[in-house]
Image 1 (cartoon, rainbow, N blue to C red):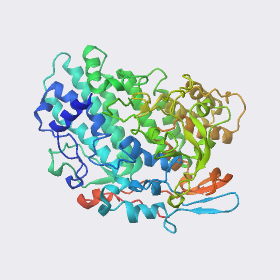
Image 2: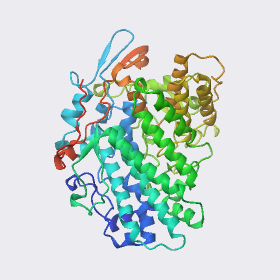
Image 3: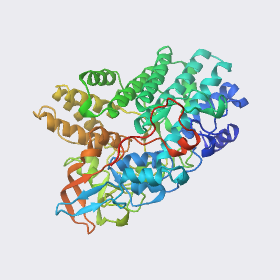
Image 4: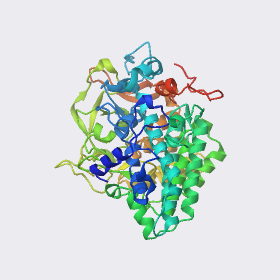
Length: 550
């Protein structure tokens, strides 16, 4: 996929997104009446365009946070306390500002909006329709419904298209592609918002391309899994042949078929689906509320999940930034160096174990602590920078995972699940069901896979609590920048209980090693007011506002 091809797609299939009403003015090339969608080549090209419609093509986003993978996902990593910022664009500094930090000497650093806190700020200032495109809570919703609409467009057109060669194979791949991304989009909606909309109509097929039937986040996750299962069922009937490979290569841009990315076989794809379903269960259930049956489900899904040699869904930049900008397209890119939008937090650095090569290979100590605009928050104060491993003289060890590379194509972004995530979910389930040593062995496996160079923890007679701490730290480090940090903070209860024993800096740069951070973040965001104003809930809809308050 190149820039000219994307432009052609955009011009050929202009339209507006659904679920959100067209007053939101979100551009999306999803017009099902387009003649190009009535041809095999047009439909495959449109499917490749999912990378744009789902992750880049929302008409406007502030240039400082950026598009989906740098901006919308930046919100996750801010609230997951792996990055911080004093940049005020689109209110991102407020999204990641905890209610307060209590330092070792008793000094209390308050949220800059005190007495209002993050939840108050979101509801009073950010998530209101009059704020327009400054509403930080709107973008993930908009992107994911953009993607859902694109998937609906393929499904609504495919049966009318005549395919050459192995027609059933080509049609099956395209349908699986659509159901996979529908399941993905609904997974993100149900994992982030208190309610959502199930919509199987492409824009133009139904009045306004949407409906006002809001359903609970739990129903959204069930619908996500239903679509993932539909993809898996189709994949079970497919075998790899020339037309299978050609169709997949038509859907996945060549620059995304590098490293861990590639043409997934049907079996690989099914394993990716199992890992995604395990994620849907794990991240949307408080650890304190997990049942034995749920842990068993996690073990079953991950046992049949992504293997070390499997391809997964990845994204990379290219020189023209068709999908991702090399220097600004991801949270990693926007965190690299001393003067970027995001800053690495002290709490992330704290979670690296002594001797971890992933730390020495990717971070450096600043000559002086970064304090920045202290009136805009407090948690972004830091002594550390993320290194650009694509810069001359900063290559590092090739056997150790790289967290940042600003060269075109240098950084591998995981769009969905990964082998490491699969193994750590299984490890967590094993540890919590009495098989501590088996779980620790998987933690060791992930660390070896990423080149951490750490001594094994399996076989060292760790207690349950210490084993859980190994798991917690490894998820923070091993899954860095994979949009899981906020989910973990939520399910571990940290949004309410806060983090004790934290490393934090004062406004003079003094280091506290036993600070207490009270986050107080909204665990599931309310439905964006931009949607509610133009698409009010129909009678019988589920509540669209999270009842949680400060």
